[in-house]
Image (cartoon, rainbow, N blue to C red; front, top):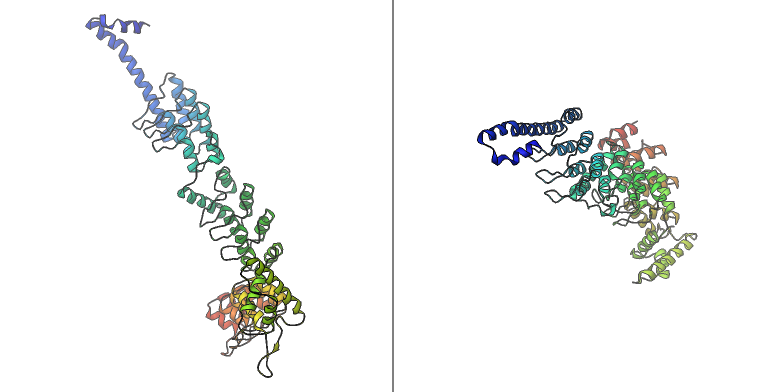
Length: 500
């Protein structure tokens, strides 16, 4: 009160009294304010350098109860802003208890809440919100704390600030890229599944493509990561979401030979009858792998459709050479433009083929046009070779069940087993050998399926044929054995297995 009264009487003081008052009262006040400012600057420096800030800050606040915590540096950064930026929760709590302004902003108009949300400091966000931090403040770029949290993937903070999960801001390209890198790190086991859950629990990209049109579920299925796959399904991922090429998670699992992943997806409602843009089903993808159990599993789950039947009938119908089968099909089917009627006609035609199968008309030898000739009906055989080249296991199996001879040959004397061995299609090779196909048939050049498999580096087929009686000592017309083909292909593994 004495100081205030003297200030009010300032105009009535003499020059000597004015000088006396200045040195007695105002200079000490300026020194005190400067000391307070220096103490606040010390706290800022301690937080910025992260040099035992809590212990030192406690001492400063204890010795100086009237410290001004709003003192800012040249960047307008207060002690609270620096401590928040460094993520020091204990010091932030201490400063808030001593009255620090939680809504102070720096030159870029960023508040402590924005710094905490942007860097994922959940505890600091909670403390700032409890002391009245404004949620809607936006920085110089126009982003709020919720915007920054969403862009950085901290969805828990987004919800803490007050946003709903369905109102989360959409991801941009950079976010999608970062999301894929996270998934890649999970798949390669560089980070834990718990790390994934922490970053994706509130995410909006579960069913969105993150890499080449693939979703997280497709990536998990393709890599056989059952823990990640089940987690994503539990988070609400749709099992039949497809990539840009129409490939579903079930197709990806089947193509990679992951039986458990395929079982989990089908148990969660994945449709095995879906087709990609090339018309392939999960069964078609499974035939490219040597996992026969997986093939049988998917085949058993599929709803039988007219795809195989329609293909067989079209081969029979369009093949130019006349024969009993062509006449039989023409008798039972007319080519119509309407798709529904066409399917019915095809169904009836196939029934006719199956009914005549017992009479030996589907792929049984019949007298050729040359005297004494005895040719094979080419229609079903042609369909079978085409099925092998297209890796269509379903169609091939259907043709075998219709009575197709296992020893039919093409124009160069190659059998069905020779063609399947050259392509490395283990499922078809296994089916042929299981049904009794000859293991060592020679083509016109004297080459056996074992030689062809060695020539094209089909290692699983080579070992499978050897296990089922393939003779590695047979020579072709050049005098070559199977080991010579492996040597020419520069495959040391098959060469060592075939040498004798």
